[in-house]
Length: 327
Length: 281
Image (cartoon, rainbow over all chains, first blue to last red; front, side, top):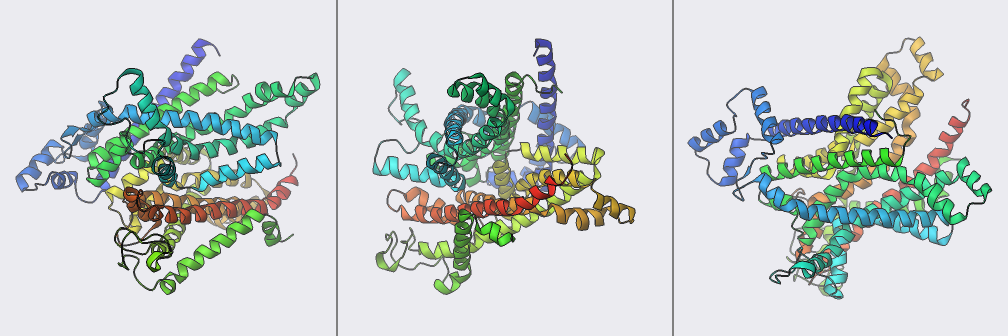
């Protein structure tokens, strides 16, 4: 694909992504209006004071005394300038809170994602090469098992086995509190804390990718160009890697884009189980404290993350598969 | 071959069905087996499985874990079933209108569907339940709101392929209205994939409900499996049974529904394959 074409593709997809983000903001606005009680009374309730003067002040501050379309415009302007509101519980702007926590979540979700894709695709390929034999059935059963297991329960079981009984790995947090490590020692400490949460989050998606890769491998393996390669005398290993796997990966990439939202959603549960200091844990704390401003901020942030992730997979897809329609 | 025979050929599906029947019996018989509230203190807290008359142990307030699991089964089935029905109603209607209507209606509905598929579904469910305060109604609504898009896509695809068939044209020539054609002519022919999807949706809904109540967003008046795991989380070092057994219940139920779904797929697909096979290529 030429550079100009790629650029046009990127521009078109970015416009689409921007429209989705706008729609998310409008959706959130509608959601807040639908909620029982107006935002002022909710916030007043949260900060523990609700005299009429304070309520009036809050209403003016949030522009609740103005017409609806003006309120929507104000809300749009705020959200798009990343003014995500103020957490009256934590006495900090929501954007600051999220900014502090976001790196931890990105570290967790990306690690889990890479693990799930590599391990899942490998298992799927192995199963596809041994269709109908014991290894295939075993891999199918493993995939089905993780698919049916609640993610937070897997986390608790891993804690039980690896932290409580075997005492191999830490069960909560992102680093050893009070150890004051720096450099490589700090990285190693974080890596040790990362193993169980990313494993927990990854196992569910591993199951999905394994099933998908298996089905997709089997489908591609039946096609003519594979038979041609075999007739030419291409070694079996090369056929699997260069001919089948490359084509079989395309649906996996597509699906990874669709699953991005689930990955982020799962991180709420995993971060809650492991006290991982990311935005998922922030959402859980916000739930406990009835801090809706923060909760909505996290919602907005995760939705935008998914949009960005979809943009990246679209681009990846266009790079991997030159046949893809640029529209 | 009959539907039942084709279904029974799949061993996994039979196992799944058996598990479902057992869990269903447990849900129905809970008031007989454990004729007391699952919230009631029955003895000493933190008793292990088999100790002090507790089959599966007692929790931090001396409540019976086994009773909680039995009573929680009904909540899981109720939420799973009702939210799936609601999601089906919404998804089938939108999918039918999009697939049969075509044109700009189809475009608009599909954009709407894509939008809901972009939003992270679990986070949306959490936000919905939190804002509208946790209750069985808000949970069911939230799960339905996040799970209808796949239904719409499947139904739309089926309607697109069926709408130009002769029996639809015949109905149109006979002067039947579009709504009658959609729901009495096309829909019955598109039921197989919807049934398979529905069984998987019940499984997903049960997982979602347990995740919500694990986070403390369950109905505060109803004992549920997710809530039990959530309350056992902080004491897992001293009372593993509090979180392990409810998790086993969720796992078995969801696994069973998935197995049944695959069995239904196997049993319903041959007919589909035959029907499509007779069409000119």
